[in-house]
Image (cartoon, rainbow, N blue to C red; front, side, top):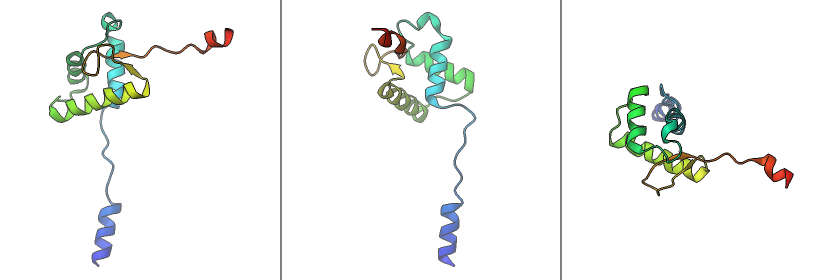
Length: 104
């Protein structure tokens, strides 16, 4: 009987679903909705405030860590650019133009 209870616990685990999009999508949305800061980049406090207001997520130590990991992950994937370094402002990466490369 012990084996059956451990199997049910392992297989009965449900994935945690959230009521908000992924952190990377929320950061993208914040950058897009702040066009006046798009050239220089959006600051992290602005992103945190946007997420608090729009999605009702309380930004505490754990959510701030998730935000920072999402920014780092996005910059490694080429989604974001960090013009002032790893702890500075965040910009969307410029879109690569394939048409211009083909014409040359």
